[in-house]
Image (tube, rainbow, N blue to C red; front, side, top):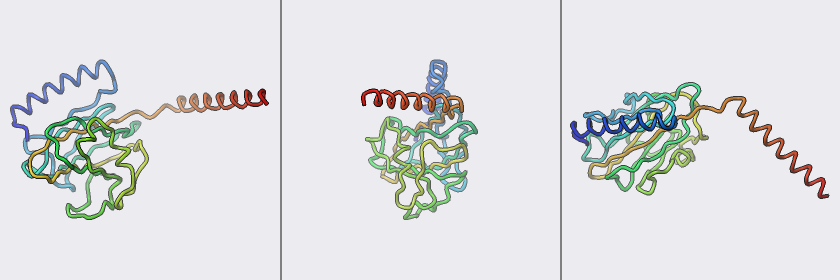
Length: 210
C-alpha cells in the first residue's frame, strides 16, 4: 500500500501527465483512479464506484496478503455512445507472479469469494508479469470454467471488476480500461461501399483475364 504523502504526490504527477496527454491526443482523455488510503472495496456487492469517460481510464491499486485486502472490487459505467474496447495491463512493480481479474455485467460482483467456477462472469484472466503492456480484454473474452464469454468491444452499460492476488506480500497493479466511440453510421456505409467497390474491381479484372 502506498503511504498517504507518496500517494498524493503520485496522484499529482499522474494528473499533470494526464492533462498533457489529453491535450496532445484525445485517446488519453479519461480518468486516473488511485486507490484511497483505505483501499478499494473488498465487498463485491458494494464495489467502489469509478467515473469513466472516453479514452484511457487507469486504475492503480495494491493487493496481496500484506495489503489492505487480497481482493478489490470496482464498478463503472460505459456511457451511451461509447464501447469498452480494451483493458491494458500496465507496467507496475512489484507485481505478483499470478493474479486474477474478473468482469461481470452490472454494478455488483455477485460470485462468492470461495467460488470454484466462473459462472456469472462475462470473462476472466489469470494475469502475470508477461501480460504487462498487453490488452488482455480479448483473452478475458474467451469462455472458460463457466464464464459466458463475450465479443469485443462491449456495449454501453454497467460493469464490475474483481481484481485479486492472494500471494504472500504486497503487490501493485495497474489496468487501463479504454472506452472508445462507436463508428458513425456514415463511416460504416463508407467502409462497406469501399469494400464493395474493391470486390467489383477484382471481379472485373478477373473477367478480363479470362
